[in-house]
Length: 93
Image (cartoon, rainbow, N blue to C red; front, side, top):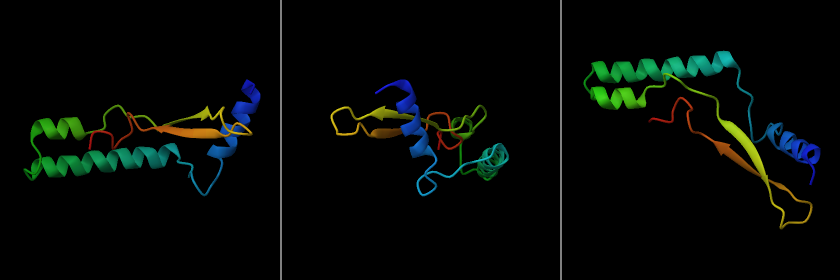
């Protein structure tokens, strides 16, 4: 499988609207701010310790990363989708 074929297969998986929904930067920022404000409210209410609140907050967040690993042992070499959630706003929860 060459690079172009791999990129085409990954693109086909990502653009499948039944499995993945596009997210705008505005929606992402809104989600991050909502999570942080909820954590602040829980901290002020005494439900979280300072340490728990700091570890749960999302100061430097990123979008989930998607990549595909080719299943070379299968006919047609389909793509196994991998979604890395490290660093997303809810990662510390």
